[in-house]
Structure formats: C-alpha cells, structure tokens
Length: 360
Image (tube, rainbow, N blue to C red; front, side):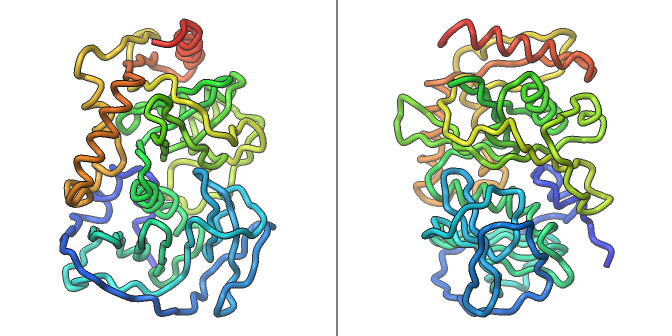
C-alpha cells in the first residue's frame, strides 16, 4: 500500500500538501456511535502496565499533560503508569463520519460535543466530550503510524476542548522557570529545545504545548512526554546521549523520535518566556512591542490551524481571551537564532542570560 506517510508528521503544515484539500462542514448534530470493532493490526507495546478492555483488547495506561490516559492503541512515547480511572480514554471503534460522502483525502468536522478528524490514508478519529477518542484505523495501519496524528493534532484538539490553551511549540524547563519556542516550519523549535537539553535543561513538551490558565496570574506548562523529534543533521550536531532513537516508522518520515531516558521535567512549571524563533546573523532577543504579542500567540495556537470552524459559538471569544491573557501576562519576544547548527550554543547562552535578568 503506497501511503503518503510523510503527512503523518505532527507538523500541521504538512497535512494539506500531502492529503489534499480538507473538507470541513460544520453542523450541530446529535449523534451516537459507540459500536465496537476488533482491530487486528495492534502492535504489542513495550512492557508497561496494562489491563484487558471489553472485547479482549489490551488497555494501556499512561500519563501525559496532567491526565491519566487509557489507550487501546499502544503509545510507548508516553510515560506508563499503573491502572487508574482515566481522564482520557482512547478506544478502537468504528467512527461514523457525518456526511461521509464529502470525505476527501482529509476532512474535519466540529460539533458541540464531538469533533471528527479523518485522513484517508491513516484513519478517522472522533473526540467526544473531551474525554474520549475513538480511533478507526484505515486498512493496514498499525499503532506506530496511528500515533503520529493521535499524539499531534488529535491530542491538541482534545486538550483544547478541555479548556487548555494549546500552542504549536516546544517547551523547556530551566530550574523552576520555563521557555516556550514558537515559530514557523523549519524555524528550529525542536532543534533549539534539543540544544537546551544538551546544556542541562529539561524537556517539558515538544510540538504540543498545553497551558493551564486556571490561575490567571500564573500560567503553567503541563508536561507532555519525554520525546523530541529531530532531523538527522540536527540530531548529529546535538548528540543527546540521554536519548534512545526509536525505530523509524517509515522511510518518508524525515524526523527521528528521540526518547529521553533523562532530561524530562515531569511536573508543571510556570511560563517565564515565550519566544518566536527567526533566523538571524547573531543570537539576539527583543520583546515584541505593544499589541504585537497577541497576534503571535494567536498565530501559533494549535486550534487556529483548523480554521474558524473549530471555534464555534462562544469558543472563539474564549480562545481570544486566553491568548490575550498569555500575551499580556507573559509577553512574547523575538529570538534570533544564528544560521548553522554549530552556533546553537549562542542561542542557548542568550536564553539563559535573558532568564537570569529576572521577570519582565
């Protein structure tokens, strides 16, 4: 089966160029669809605590983003834990995509209680009440491939529906403080995060940054899972000795998954700095002045990449309020990263100096 596997990267910019134009109807429907189907392509996980789910499937238990996650999809990227009452349940089930005749290579649909994301080459995912994700794999798709959209756009949308502000970014803990790296595709978010880890700091999350804003005066970054995705040249330059490179899922996926054995921050940390990465001649940090911070936060918030349809009703106003809260409380700075992997330490030094200067 010749699949556009490169599209399974978490990076949202890769969805449409590979899968084609997305279909995104948006109607308020009240649908039920909790039937079951046996999935024969489940890959056995690495050793982890697990139970048997109804129907005989293996249910794995993990922790991520402050949640207890139970999953019938093996997700060795996540931290395993003992069985407990789940906050988020991931199950293999048939998913009846509303108005399936409109399905193209990629299709999204957003309702009040359910959200649907479908990639013809991968499968269909349904989020229900922000507490359950039903996964209907395409024929021949196994767990490692399902994990790419499941731990990227699908998880991001589920976290958003739980009231968190989700950014397409990477985050690093520096002592009791933290930095967030936002930026366009290729800006070097994961690479800069890797350089920070090499310097002795700890990863909070890569690709999906979830912010808890329940305390307006203290936005917190929730720890994701100990994995960093790096291109081969970046991995060769940084050489994270505390990381295990996981087997390549498919030759078309250009970034390797680096599982950290050390260097992961397992507790939530207050947000200290938010940087937008840009290429420059030298390492330099400059605050975005005036109202420029808010558009930057909005641009790199994950849900805006699905379009206006993903924010129906009062959700748009609530999302704008969250972005304004973070922009006003934390602020955003431009971080110029020198071209060339050999100069990454210059950016690390600039970040450390900025943090040492105190609270803005």
